[in-house]
Image 1 (tube, one colour):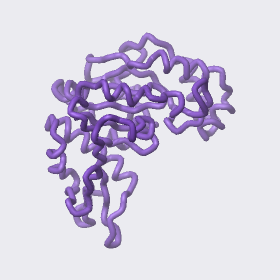
Image 2 (cartoon, one colour):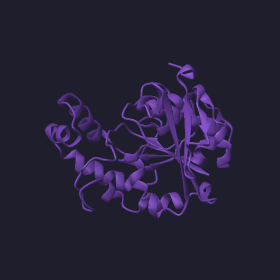
Image 3 (cartoon, helix red, strand yellow):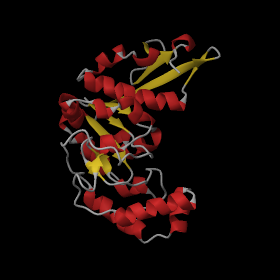
Image 4 (spheres, helix red, strand yellow):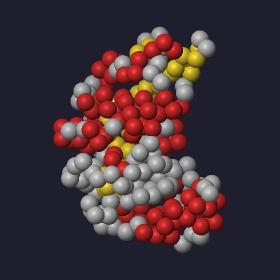
Length: 260
């Protein structure tokens, strides 16, 4: 069983890493092509492409211009510890022990606009390049065209996907890049809904954090059989057999159970 998550816009390269274990991204050569293209942009080009303020565009242009393999502990950080958004708050990777990092390295993958597909302990350097970015390139008009079939093929080659079960904890924007309809695996997508005014709805902030909580639950319990995921009950969520389908597993949280 393999699970995939999205990266985060927010990054933490200031906090020292809690592990010396590290690996190198598989698609660095492809990443270098994208970076080389972006290094020629102006601040205004980056601002327009990514819909950023000039200040943020300048920061990210500097990141691209400073991007330089080979990656090591001095100039990079492990992806699972470098990303710092809502999913990663729930995942709380800095508190993993060696067994946790080892399990995550085998069973968790992070989709990325720049790096394609990352193992948790892959070194990365700071960047911002969302998968949905319409960056024209030699393969087409956006990053989906750039990555093509590569991410699908890479996932299918993963030993943890030998049982052909993929747990999708990524956003729609990122998961689109794996060509799910062509992927040779059963895809189970957990969905997290909160009760509000008597109705259950997906609330983005809570859903993102809970994707991280579920990732951590799978890692902590070293789950390799999907049925075991149904026992997930962090922060008051409970599996709903009634609302779930074969491949979409719904977890509900009542208003009185909510942890705000």
